[in-house]
Amino acid sequence: MASSAGSPASPDCEASSLPTACPGRSWDSTRSPRSSCEIRSHRDCLIRVLVQFFQGAITVNDLILRFTGPEMWIMPKNPFSAMSNLRRLLVADVPSSWDASWPRLLIEAAPLLESLYVHVSHSEGEPRQEVPGETSALRHHHLKELVVIGFQRTERQMRLVRFAVEVSTALRRVALLKQGRVEEKGS
Image (cartoon, rainbow, N blue to C red; front, side, top):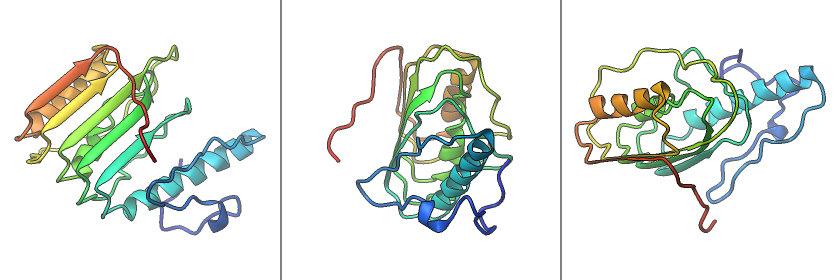
């Protein structure tokens, strides 16, 4: 589906079209492509950008990921390189049709992660493809808090909770909230 991050950018994905990671700023990837060819190119470009971002995100302490589109991208291996300084992570607006267990890839990539908040937004869509890959046998010694907002006790959501409980030796708080929302405060 996507080429490797080390490959040169395609003509449709020039460096000037890529977002820059700036503290306190976000990138809106909702630019509307016109044709199915552009949609594929846009999606491939976005995946390449995300992989490149995460490969360079080793110094990030706090991260907010917000998903606003219906498409779920899946890659054969974990695209999130080691984020050795990440301590707090909010994954917001994950459509309920997605495989909610995929944040386990982020838990595995962030050995110092202390707090993980996952907000699942209700959607009417059909369940999407599951995230491939085996769960890690490694223990996570810093994750103290897991909060899932929009919890509906689906098998996919339960898989994430089970994974966090099984691998986290420091887990002190698990909150599974049926209702709630995430609000942005400040910039």
